[in-house]
Structure formats: C-alpha cells, structure tokens
Length: 146
Image (cartoon, rainbow, N blue to C red):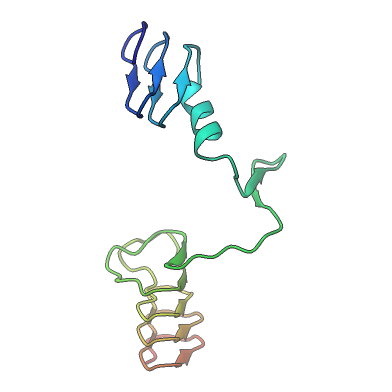
C-alpha cells in the first residue's frame, strides 16, 4: 500500500510506502517512511544483511577472512563478448571485450591477451593469441602457440 508522497512503488507482498518521493519497496513485509536514501537502507536491511566485504579508508572493498565459492567462474576485468565460458573458470582481461581471454573448458584458466583455454582443466598463463585445447594442457606464454 502507498499512503502519500509521489511516484512511490510498493511491489513486495504486504509492503508499504508512507510518504516521500520515488521510494521503492520490493521486499515482502517491508515498509519505508519517506526521507532520503531509503531504497539503499531497505536493501541493506532486507537483502544484504550479511555482506562479506567492508570498505577501507582508501575506498577499497576488502573481503572478510572467509572462503568464497564461485560455481560458474570469475572474470576480472572486461567480460569477453565472444567467449562461451566454461564452468568453474578464471579469467583476467584488460579493457578489450571483443578480443579478451576465453576460458571455455570447464575448470580452465586464462591470463594474458586474446588467449583461449578450450580444453577441460587447461590453462594459458600469459602471452598473446595462445590456445590450450587438450584436456589438462597448458601454454605458459609467448604468441600464437597451440
């Protein structure tokens, strides 16, 4: 329900907005009472109650002392627009989304530039235009190696 204000949204089941402007309540059984920055406060209180990171004095997000599990994979930098990412992969890319690294094989890893690790559990650890296509294969650097 909405009981005042303007351009407010209460989309969660049994949610309400009481006043304010452009307030959004999307969680079930939640309320917002006007004022500023309530959407951020709602997210923190309803969805992000256990955030595994804290911001340090220099503005860096620092992980708590914990293990993290990423079933699909991790891409650091730009996601390659031409890659079909495998399961449980790791890739570090620069600023090019078209010719970035591509860990296609399950459990594969790519570093460098325009490298592909298409074999399962394969790795390309640096260089340019390298491909590790066989199971358990690895290219450690150079250019245009397969």
